[in-house]
Each structure stands twice: as structure tokens, then as C-alpha cells.
Image: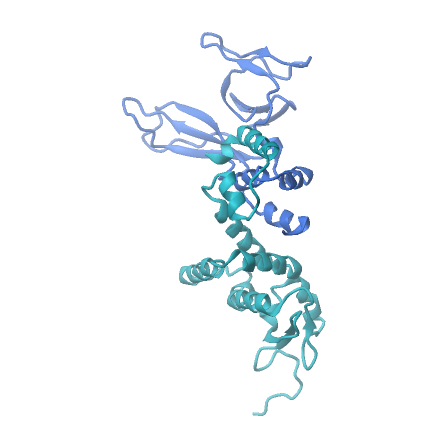
Length: 159
Length: 174
């Protein structure tokens, strides 16, 4: 069996997806992965701190449930566009409601020629297999057609 | 015109160094190839390993060292180009083909390589063996991985912990 230091070096080079699988193989590896914080748990959806609810007919979201007494860190005048791994995509930026960190989004890129009239949807996207970054995707909505053909990734940052 | 007599290593043939494995086999390689090892690089820069002296590597046996040097010799030209920003697609494809073939080896050899890459601090090789380790578990269940790696079957307590892990990290198994 490889010494811990050597194993940690190998583990540190693995994608989070593979690393998570190794963590589940035996107790020694779980201890190693957790003890050295190799898996960035802060990026993973491992616990639930609170639930927000966005009623269709209401312009902004409400805090529905919070297991601990907490002060509201959420700007109540903004509506939630999307959410992912505990982060909220609001109009104009991304909020981490657990820490209160707010990262404004850059100006969206100009639409391609011919797409000016179309509205767009925005999404928070994260897949640990691909990247440890959470990204914002802007997808133009093309009316009367089933496909979206102007997908622009325009904001990427670490939160 | 006569070649200058002083051998500062920059003229004519490439400078060679000698590495000595734990079982006392001597390997003569170009300094540029051996210098892929961060551990050896300083010694070589200080002029070590040349002439009759060799650099002893008490942690690496001859079979492993021979394999490691095969990697270093293949990768040295690209490394000399600063990570080969101007390498052609053909060169890169050839290195990739070599790398894939290189780690197509038994697990015992892979373990020796992982140890050697660690001891000699060869960044590219460390990444390559990690990739191989990741490939070994791709698409396998935790039980299959345990068997692949020669673990005994889990106790009921271990099995319960594995199940709990799979619940918590379900996304990793998708």
C-alpha cells in the first residue's frame, strides 16, 4: 500500500468525481481525503442551510425555512433566476446566502446579429467532473422553435 | 578548426550524467532528461553525476528506473521547449500515444512508478500515473474497485459506511 503522502499527491491530481469515489472505498482513504481537505466540500451540496421559495406570482423570493436562528442575508427585492449548490443567481449577480458574498455579473455580451429581439434565460451551471468553477450560462430564447442556438458562457468566477 | 578543449558541457555531444539504482545498476542519460526530476535537477546543475561519479538513487530499483528514464528521454525535448508551446499537433499526438502506452502496465509496476515519480518529483509523470489511477476506477462500483485494488471484501460495518458514502456523494457515480 502506498504511504499517505504519496497517495495524497495522487489524489490531489484527481478530478473531484474520481476523488469522491476513492473516498468511499475504505476508512483509511476517507480519513486521508477528509483530513487533508482534498475534496473541496465547500463546493459540494452536502448539507442544507435554508430553503427559499419563489412563488410564480410574487416578484421576489421568501425565506421559507431556516433550521438555525439567522439574520436574513438575502436582498429581498431581487428575484431568484436560478440556483445551484447553495448559490443563488439573482438579477444582476450571484449570491452565496450562507456567507452573504455577492458577486455582480458583468454586462452580458451583445446578441448575435438577428438575435437582438429575443429574450434570454440565465442559468448557474456546475459539474464537478468538468470544472470546480460554477459558471453562468446565458441562453437566448428563440421563439417558435424548439432549439436554443445562441449559447453564450459569459461569466466565470470562483465563489 | 579544432574544437575548444575545455568541456563546459555546451559543445558537441549533450552532457551525460550517471544514475545508480538501488541494486547498483548504472544508467547513463542526457542531463536534460534526468533534469525532469526536480530532485535531481539541483544536483545536476551543481555539476553532479558526471565523470566517474554517479548519483545514487537508493529508493529506485533498476527495473523502475529504466522505465522512468524511458519517460524522461521521451519527454525531455518537449520540456526543453518550455512545455512545447510551438510543438506541432503531430508531436503532441505522438507524446499522448506514448503516454497511453507507457502506463499500460501491471499494477505492481504502476505502484513502483508512483513511488519513483514521487521520490524523484517528476511532475509530468506524477500527473500521468494519477490519470491512470483515475482510469482504473472509471465506471466501476466501489466493490469492483476494492477487488481491482486487492482489498478484502468489506465487513458489514465497512459496507454500511460505503453505502452511506454513496448516498452522500451520489453525483460522483452518475
